[in-house]
Amino acid sequence: MSDAVDAIIGQWIAERPDLEEDLWPVHVLGRLQRLGRVLDKEFRTFAAQRGLELGEIDVLTTLQRSGPPYALPAGALLKAAMVTSGAITNRIDRMEAKGLVERVREESGGDRRTVRIRLTDHGHEVTREYMAAHLANEARMLRVLDREESDRLGGSLRKLLESFGDTSIG
Image 1 (tube, rainbow, N blue to C red):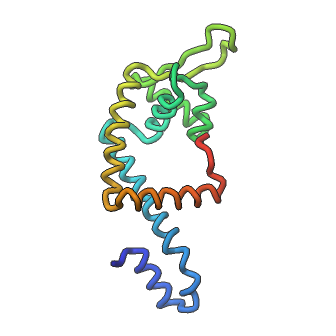
Image 2: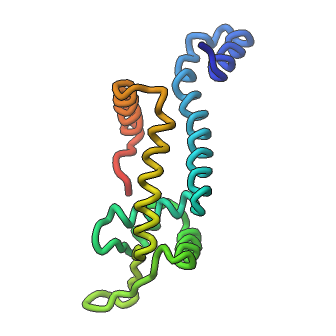
Image 3: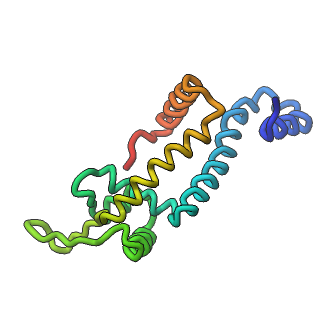
């Protein structure tokens, strides 16, 4: 069986036979790079079919995972999203217009300037529906792997991510 990465490696070997032994990382990293692009497109399309953007999904799921009262300071969302403050403000504005989130000012004891972003009832409903469909979609995307292969791949990818210091979600 052969894929685009095998073809690229073959071209390099034909052009630069002296690199053949050094091309081994391309077997993994070239595929991860291509897979990342494919998955990004799949996820964006899936979200768009539901009237959402990936950045909005990120905010919705971060708030849902945070537990009751399903609200976080805007700064916490900014850190989790790894975007500029202007980008997160625009994202929250769009989501507020869709009725997914609301801005809530601290009322008691805290700094009244602190604004928390909270899931609305509609935001909860959208998140619940999205996650059920999303997990089914992810299972569909991995259908070519059995559970053991999937678990092994997940462990290997975790090890690789940890080697780059990617050990937390925020």
